[in-house]
Image 1 (cartoon, rainbow, N blue to C red):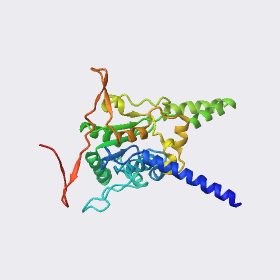
Image 2 (cartoon, rainbow, N blue to C red; image 1 turned 180 degrees about the vertical axis):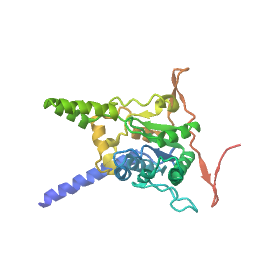
Image 3 (cartoon, rainbow, N blue to C red; image 1 turned 90 degrees about the horizontal axis):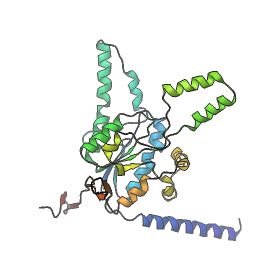
Image 4 (cartoon, rainbow, N blue to C red; image 1 turned 60 degrees about the vertical axis):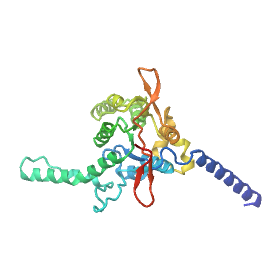
Length: 306
């Protein structure tokens, strides 16, 4: 390679590095979110692959982003250590396989199997709900096509305590299903088309291309805390994130109200809610972020409180 080409590449690399540095600076130093705690809620059991979800799922990126703002991230895939209870409630991609040992027999053998399965998962449920109790706000990922029990439970626990829940309801579509349907029609495969139609009803396969969340969540969470995607594209280069399926998803359906820019703004000013009576945005007192000051080597305390 010629010396001129190498010099040009080095200059381009420096320019790119400077741009990234400026973007990091523009994100701002930790401010309102400094030392806040967040819990990342979302389906873990009935996803396509627990291994992929743990290794490359949305929690990894959102965690990277929030830690940049000095937020403590509670991730159910990476549970914190508990003093005196080593690895209490820890889960991995094989945890749910133990569910296959459930039995329906009515006699002692079935009862013992059910009791054992229930008791075995209790530590995971216990620590996840404790993380919800001790966090300041929750980020929840709720695709309308994935069955989940733990996620609604965690959201309801948080909202009973009036903690903000930022809910991402992504655009749901099934391109492979549509391609298969067109393929069968082009081949005039009547039986295949009939079976595909039956499968759509059995699963069920129901698209949600407008990303509209469940009606039950709407009054529970409040209109201003819903998002139709994460908005990863804007920050992908900055955090050097590797390509993942959600990138293709958000390229096809660019979020109109993405989560990450909201979090970036939240670091500088608290969000408001819409007041139906006043017909304007008003203060949202769900956002209670403690301002604790450490005193010497002792624990933290409130300052300026009567």
